[in-house]
Structures are given as C-alpha cells and as structure tokens.
Length: 367
Image 1 (cartoon, one colour):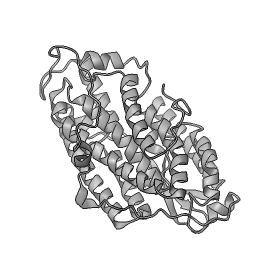
Image 2 (tube, one colour):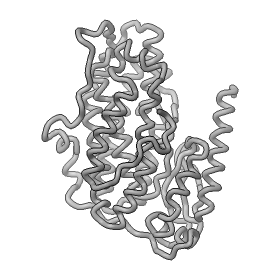
Image 3 (cartoon, one colour):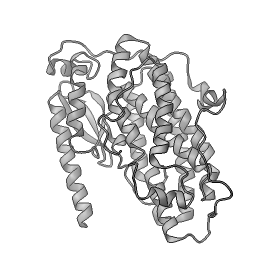
Image 4 (tube, helix red, strand yellow):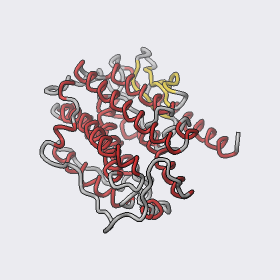
C-alpha cells in the first residue's frame, strides 16, 4: 500500500469515526456497510429501524456541522425514526412526521425530460469558439498524452461505468432508500425508471471508456466529491440529491455536445435529457413535500445542506486544469461560468417553490 493510499484510508477512517460519534449524540447508529465499505446504513438505536445512508468521504468536520444545524429537526419529528427515539434523545416529544404520497405523476409519465423540453430548451446555451475546433478525435485515433489524461480524468469524475463497482454500489443505496423511504408505490416506480436509465448510462460510458483504455474501463473509482456522501435520511434528502446532482450531470452533458472527442458528443444529448429528467423527478418530489407545512419546513431546512454542496461540485474557479480542458476542446466554459449558469437555473426553480435561497457562500469549500 503506497503512502497516498494509506493516507486516504486513514483520513476516511477518521471521518467515519467522527460520523459515528456525531450520530450517537442523537441516537443513531452507523451500522453495516451498504456498498463496498464506502456507504453505511443508518439505524435507530432504539428499534434498529433503517433511517438512511451516509458515505465515508465527507470532509473532516462537515458531519458535526450538518448535524448541529438539523438537531432540532429530530426534536420536532421532521427527521429520525417513527418510534420517536431521536425526538426523545434531542429533547422533543414528537413522533416522526411521514411524507405524504406525491400526486399527479406516475411511471407512465417517464421519461420526465419530455415535459421539461416541451416548452423549448430549458438549459442555457453555452458559447463556443468561432470556427471549427483545431482538435477533433474519433475513437481509435492516436491521442496526445495530455489530452488522453484529461479525458480519463473527466470520465473518472463522471463515474457511470459498468466496470466501476462503486457506481453499482451507489445505485444500490438509491434502491435501498426508495424501498424504505418512498411515500408511495408510484414514487418507487419512478425511482425504478431512474435506476434503469442510469444502467443505460453505465453501458454508454463503459463502451466509451473501453475505446480509450480497457484497464480504465474496469477500474473501480469511488465517488470522491462529498456531495455523493452527504447523509440521506428522508425523502426530501433523496429528492434534493436528484434535483441538484443529476442536474449537474445535465449541465456537463450540455457542454459535451461540442466536445472535441466525438464519441462523447454522440452520447451527450441522450445523457443531458436523461439527467434533466432525473432532476425533474427530484423537483417533483420537492414540490409535493413543499405543499404541506411540515414538508415545507423540512425542505427549507435541508436546502442548507444540499445547496452549497451542489455549487461546490463545479470545482474551484481558479483550477489550473480548466484552461487545459478548454484549450483541447473538452470544455467550453470555466468552472465559475458553468456554476453561475447552474445557480441561475436552480435559483429560479427553488424560488418557484416559495423557498428562501441560501447564502451561496455559506459552508462552501471549493470556490
């Protein structure tokens, strides 16, 4: 084991111990691994009921900050187990509020991107340089070393590959959450459609990766960004994940439409539409929750957990790699430009739900 691997393992172990200690303070046990030791199931210390999932690649100190911000949600019965153990542990007496079943949307409406595009293109247009790109590569073409390295780096960050067992592990957590937390059969059916489309993406990206480097196509690359490891303890958490994180995928796929790597351009439109549909699914669930007074409180409070993580997913504004990606035609925008376009979009959607927008600089780590 090299020093970098050993150091990363030690850091993850320390973060996991922090997560265990913080959750113990509200009567939640970090239990058995849910997926390859990367995600762990959360269980009630009172009745052993399943409460959700958390990942071990959170940033140090983040879990303590997150839980302190939502401690009163346990006391008020807006998070935690129906047995009331977390409410009692945090000084409350309420039983667990249960999310109502969403109305007006079932699996027959899938794919949800059709509704989103029905009134025109919902995503912003990204500018491209004038004239043809000086770089155009097809599968099998000899690639400059720097270009190949950047392309593989981008695909590793994407993660949706059939040969990446950490992708399947994360999908398993999504299935577990749907089974345990979905408020209706219709909601579970929508999540099943989501899983099916993510499997399609895994095939598309696997074939693309195989055309670049077979050893990379079969490599396990865990999701490292902390947004994939935030605790998901209720249906609103799961809805926020889809609204924000899948939308991030749609924005990046929009940029890939003009990529200099032609195999990526061929799948970009499909991935963009699907990911926007997944985001619309999360938004539909958030709208249903926000229609109820308890749900609106829960959604508004949990927005403070997901909003900064979503903005952080675009990386640092001054990343030294960005000019290289743009120079090779793998990207058209810098991190801050695409983040701002994304923020403009999500702010309009959140305002339409009547939610108060968080401070975009609060609890940010990558600016």
